[in-house]
Length: 270
Ligand SMILES: [Fe+2]
Ligand SMILES: [Fe+2]
Image 1: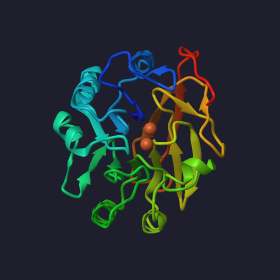
Image 2: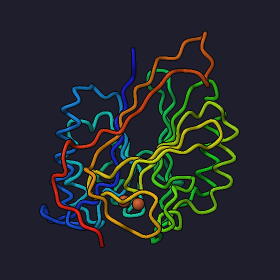
Image 3: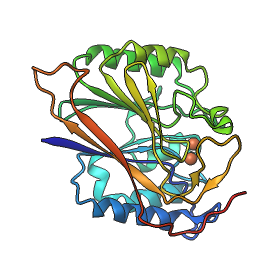
Image 4: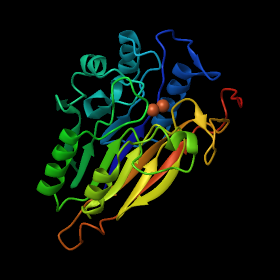
């Protein structure tokens, strides 16, 4: 029996329903992605949104996203990106944005796995940071639940993705976070948003993953910002139920990115 997770990221919606970012009408694109999510036929146990909900950081935009996600709200966790406003996100997603004054975060046991979400948002800045209070909280969770296979979710990737312009706006001062993950063998994956593309790397024993945006895509391995014409998408995880006979580092899991079948909206290079 498997536990299924859905990860959505980088929605970049506008208050205006027909708002466009780099020629992509982001609200229509999200609606199409959600239709593709339904099309998988999977009953997702949890849905994690890894930030950049809006491009205008307006209350009505968060409310629009909240409305579009209605059927998943009872199993949804949200995390802020750089294009977010923490107070508004918390206000509108009051049941889905957990945490304390250290930031928006969550730690839940689902199907024998530990899912942890971390806030990397720095108000007014594009790059992210795992603040010391958040890192302390994460260290406590990892220590308390060391026997559970674990997936971390956050907006900013903790390692370089090979695009100079994105790597310059990634996670600032990633050393302490990297050290913590490297010293926590139960962490099987760190799955992030922010880079609007699919990418895979490693950090200690963990796989570092990124997901496409539900709207605009960026060309991988590019020195400068270039918009990709590849369709938007989302990430799915299938997690096997742990058993006493299997070590925490060996519990089975798989993941894949699912993209829309065709380029629905025109995209252009800058
Ligand atoms: Fe984004
Ligand atoms: Fe971002």
